Length: 429
Image 1 (cartoon, rainbow, N blue to C red):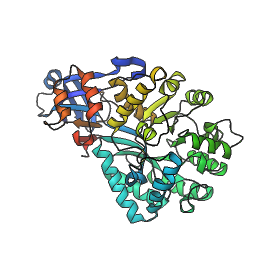
Image 2: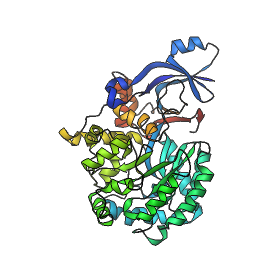
Image 3: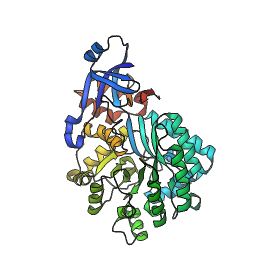
Image 4: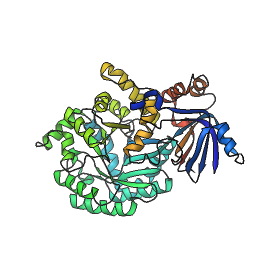
């Protein structure tokens, strides 16, 4: 058992429902962790009085926050970050896809997996929904490295059977066979789970989507993830390839791939009918603001999503996104809504923390276990402690209240400010 003393901040309720009241804070808080689970939380004085024999771990100064949850990130693309100045489809051809082809070499894939998982932990990301490699062997390598990392990882082999370079293509039959083997080996192994992952409708035929639907039924608790409505050129190409589909989302819906365990990345250019379908099926959208900006894909219509009951979390979209920090994604999400003016939705610090913690946990079906620091949750947490000489440390010393402190974190924090990371009570960094 461990007693922590810290300033504790989390959002145990939906900030889009409860507003500023969603933020819970103890400025001098006590947290008891027993066997990886939070056993007590409250003011330090109260918690200390109830556990007088425990030597406290003092995390002051600094902030104790829930572990961050990334709902869309690409394992093969860490070395492709910062391919700026290109729209989506050209960026894929020139930056992302050549790098993904290199993962055919298992040694290369192993090195990339180590870099990727280390970067997640360094950024305070304790849980992630990860696009794997197009190669089964490279995906196997990644799962093995993820198990060693002790992070909570949901991932899957990426499948495509058209449009992309030939070395990245497979057949529906092989995709089904390889997917079954990966699911049998890794799904439910420790903190690992599997997600059925067609790259996007543009690169998957009807037969491949049918295979994905079959694969999704092979085990309980599988997730589904893919891309949706990221750029106008992509949307137009999908319409050409699926002429009988009413819209992009319909390509997936026709095969039963839209539901409460589906996470669709981007959705920058949705139709009204698509938003209605996403809302009615309780599907999730991973909003990736730095990627949307870097590729010029557009400004995410958050207000329209929420008005239709569509649930939204955050993703970094490495490597089109500009790094692994969900604090930066939160800040960019804020900027995007400000730039939309009357069409945007003003975001508070509570919204930003919710988007990259509890919302992500809900998207991945893990909110009974993680996402906030309530009693009964597993201790997935990060200790943010900037260097004394940093601007972040300066402004935190002068924060007016916990919400103001959180605003300063999203404005200024980087991975360098994260001093410790725990997953299920295990210190992983």
